[in-house]
Amino acid sequence: MGWRVEFRPMDIQITDFENASLSVFMALLTRVILTYGLDLTIPISQANENIVRAHHRDSVRHEKFYFRAGGDESSLMTINEIMNGNDKFAGLIPLVEKYLNESENINSDTRVTIGHYLALISKRAAGILLTDASWIRQFVMSHPAYKQDSVVSDEIQYDLMWKITQIANGHDTCPLLIQNRMKTNTQLNPE
Image (cartoon, rainbow, N blue to C red; front, side, top):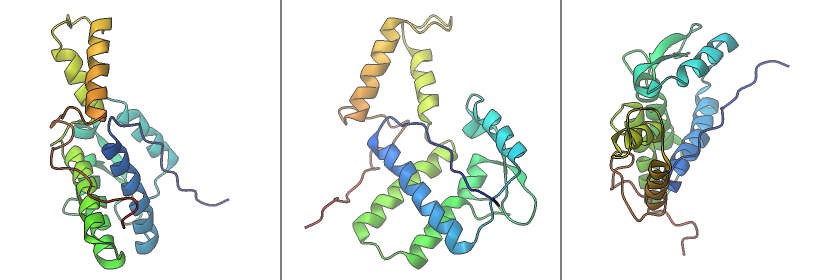
């Protein structure tokens, strides 16, 4: 059968903007891989180890993952290094930016929107913005009704769901998750 490539399903995010960011990034990354002939394959044992590490608390900021950045061998890299680059690897986001600059003929509003999408992913990878999981944990831990006993009461659950609903519907902001200036100007059916 040969090699197969798999992008694991992503967790649903709180806002449409976050979901769009990840979806657009994955679509563009597939084009980058095909256009530049990137070989990002790693042994299945390392992929499985990456999954185990990804389940650790705050793994985006504190874990290293197997990643093949070039050559025949994979190495351990942080999510920030994988996404934003280091001295040995350009980074997936800079490669997407390069692809957009060289290959895509897109209007300025769409380019600005994609820029905001990539900025969100970049800042989460760098630890500048929280992931949804980190934000939820922080919300629960700082809730006045939380007793530091690992019990998430009905009151805390209600307040969390209310806050998430308010953020998702655009009635409240959360600069720890998404910076206020990150928005889309692109219209689906421009006239």
